[in-house]
Length: 157
Image (cartoon, rainbow, N blue to C red; front, side, top):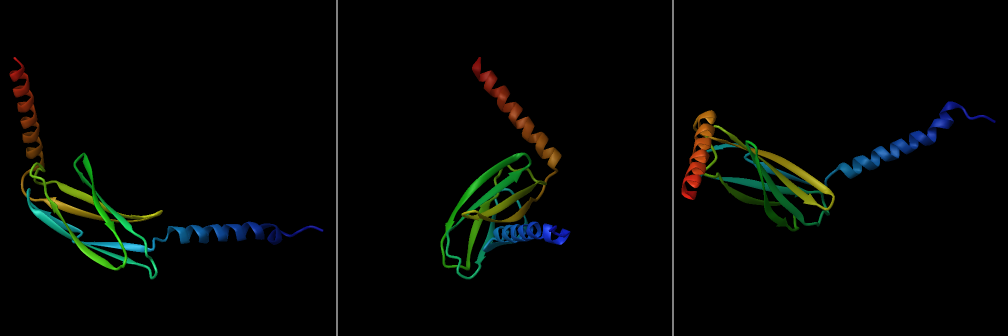
C-alpha cells in the first residue's frame, strides 16, 4: 500500500506549524517600554528628562533590568539604570546630563534596553545638540588634542 503525497507531507507540515507557533510565542515579550520624549534638542550641560513607562502582560511578576547605550559620533557608552520590580505598570523618570565636550550639531542616539530572563524590549531615543557647525567643532576638538600633545611633549624637556 502506498501513501499519497498529502499523507506523506502531513507530518512535516504539522511539525512546521508547531515550530512556527512555538517561535512566535517565544518571540513575544511579556512587557513593553515606552520612552517620552523620543526626540529632543538640548545644549551642552543641559539636563534632559525622559519618562519611562513599563507595562506588562497580566500576571508578569519578574524583575526587569534597564540599560541605556548611548552613541555619539564613534563613541559608545553604556549606563546601568538599575532593576525595576513588580508590581507593574510602572512609570519613572531618568535625567541625562548632556556632556560639555559634545560638539554642537551632532545627535546623541540612545537605546534603552529592558531585559528579564530571555526577554528583551528596546526603545530608541535621540537628542540633537544645538548650535555650532559640526565640522568646525570637530576641527577645534582636534586642535585642542594636538595642543595638549604638544604641551605634554614640551613638558618632557
